[in-house]
Length: 491
Ligand code: ADP
Image (tube, rainbow, N blue to C red):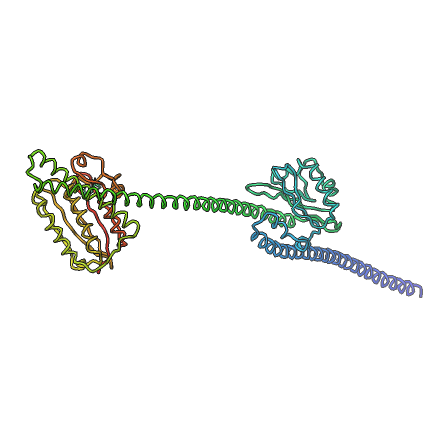
């Protein structure tokens, strides 16, 4: 019996042992699984933390982005308002507390350094009482070197970074009564410069890099607008000065013109009355000379006759001159009526040719006229225009040496006919080409010492042409000849 019991016990023990071993094995496996589970749980936890961190960062970035977008929007609006302002004080008035608040601040100040007064002046004050602003201004003045250095170096100061100098971040906070701040210099090219300050008392919000960028842009914009405003002011001032000068000058010129007119009228009146006075005795001198020359009062010795003929000739010249003078003053004062009628230019040229035929022959001058069909008829006062031709052709004859050429030509542009009287004479120096139309002007040369004249012919011609609403000018080269041109209306 005993061996069976023993065997049975051994069997039971063996079964129990195997089962124990199995359990231990399972336990080991379970432990391993738990460890693996724990590991993956930790991993998941890490990942969850990472996701949360990323989410927070994303939110922050989104917030920053939103802030930037709205900041840019505000800046754009503000810039638009500022940039259209052309008055220094008005520029700062555009920055109101709404804009400042939208940018995330409740306090703002702007100071400009007035170099003449040598002090900082307050141009903008938002978020401070008057008392506070006075205290801040006093503190800024007391630390003016620090702020001037900041402006000079173009550096910014903010809660994040304050450039080394007399004022620390805490001191600046105390001066401006804020928790965080930004100070940016306002740099204008010309004139007074300064700085803009923004700040907040809010302990939770502190200034960011983005804020600093915005305020720097704003300060730049203010600087540029200050430049524009000053340039405008300068331009406006010089324009005003110019206008005043022009007004003053115009007044002086009008006065001078009136004076010239008065003098000119007095001169014309004088010439006219003197000419009249001279003409009467001159006519009797000429009359007596003519009577004597006619030998009605007895025969004249040759010597007396020669002298009387001289008196007669010189009297003629004088009468001619007096008549010219009288005509000039009459035309000048508008007393001569210009009776315009259609006239044949070819007929006038022919008449002139006949009139001077003898002189042309004597000097062997080839005279020609070339009037195209479209210039056949002019609208002018017959006797006055004939005087013009006589004077101009007469001068051409006087100032052209033997064997020369004189030509009358014409051309037409629309309703205006240009007549050219061309000679191959001595010519007129360039600096005298305008003066020859003035009264009594004669070119100072050897020819004029030989050729007689009064210097009145061209003045009379110019007056007649202008009375016809035409123009007269000369083109000439010494030694080659001259071309006198004038314009008249076509008939
Ligand atoms: P005058 O002939 O009596 O001197 P004008 O007024 O007719 O006076 O002319 C003024 C001056 O212009 C003349 O003295 C002369 O010097 C110059 N002049 C005029 N016509 C001519 C010409 N065709 N050629 C050269 N010089 C001329």
